[in-house]
Length: 205
Image (cartoon, rainbow, N blue to C red; front, top):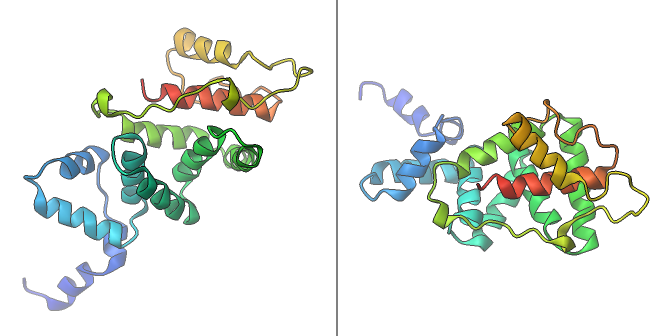
């Protein structure tokens, strides 16, 4: 009110790209018609390419009852800007497809996330968007035999990822943290991808 220059700076895109918005607030603002000013603020953040806001919107569109096509488009935009959790989500979407080319692209992404030690934080960020929403809205991905990656009969760990996951979840109580077990010790990248698929589906529990 007292400084036009400061007001004008506050309307710059970079300000909206850096706004700190808790995921619970974004969820509530998006759903409640009583928060129109906040909804306008979120729309301005999306327009300014606020990556976390865009990521959460994409997850909602893909898995919480929105438009899947719009969600996938937004997710690819966020991925192109190097957002790790978006890369993880695209990795999962690729691995859930039945074609060889998609799975190969997914494995490349998995190797990159593992090399950056980014898997745990990606899963926590994804789970943070899903948590606290009504379960009847969840579009839980279906996992079947065609989605599993490792097909080598010579692989000693093939077919054991479900048991390893159950041990991690039931025996240790926290199944997301890769630094505490998980499938990191498995040498077969295809089996590690199978483990991540199983875990991803259970992030919706």
